[in-house]
Image (cartoon, rainbow, N blue to C red):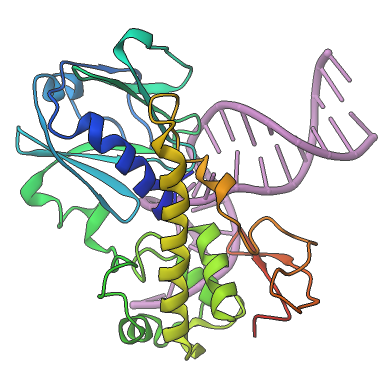
Length: 275
DNA sequence: AACAAGACCTGCATGC
DNA sequence: TGCATGCAGGTCTTGT
């Protein structure tokens, strides 16, 4: 589920039921996900109030009245299931369950690539999870000039470079393919040779904004019925991702979408449109 | 320093 | 039906 737009969608759904709320009870099942859970996790959360909620890259950050920040990453398969207190259901792979006065929120993650930890707020930026993150793609810090600098001298493919969270923080496998298509850049080009950084930056911002808009629309009316952000994909028209063998959507283009594997991951592109 | 490959997990679709 | 294979929206570690 989780690239930047999906995380943003989950965050927007979480804010009304989590921000400002006291954690009356927290259930922790198992010993951890990608990283072990912190010691005494349930005790350190119980009775604390969630002060603010924000997103950084693909992480959700909840500052707590204890001075710690609850850090959440959805990995590949993480979901937050928001339930009214009178209709709580437990599911397989529910790892942490938060109880607030108005909602019960379950962090469910079958593949367990997700992450949930606590970090002292003043030490957040120096934490290894965050220290090397690049600029937020929707911020002015992600610009043609900054991308040019980040790509300079790099011989890996532009596809792999844009997936690198230290180059830009939040793009994932779907939106890198969509960005390269929108910018007309072939995914195999060595990153350091790509001069179209202005086009790439413009494309990435546009693709992400559209995706956030689509995801947000879906979430609004499903918030209490298993909102999971994945629904957003039903609304967003993808131009290349998962469209191998299908015709290019660009008007007048006779190209057929191809799938290749780069750094172990699928890349989709139109050989006619992307040079 | 930068890069590709492997590792971590479970679930699902496909083909025999 | 069972079984094997390959695939999945991420990121960290390993070895070159």
